[in-house]
Amino acid sequence: ASAWQGKGVGSKLLATALDIADNWMNLHRVELTVYVDNEAAQGLYRKFGFETEGRLRNYAVRDGLFVDALSMARLR
Picture 1: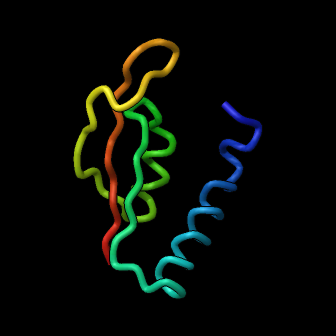
Picture 2: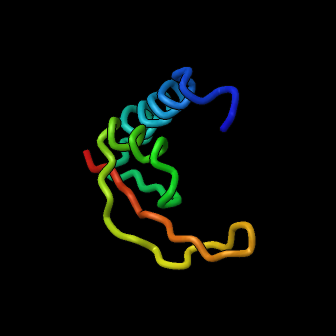
């Protein structure tokens, strides 16, 4: 946990990134990958319209163990 968690920094950063994606780049689709145990991040992404599209099994090694991740996307 970081000193920045729960202070709205992530929301502001994501809102700015999505504003650029929508209004400057005219993107129809924005994708991201998030670890399955990062529920705070998943909640933030859902708040901005991201939906889970799938589970990526054994996606990465963290602390010597394989961990799964979720593939999420937001469509305009």
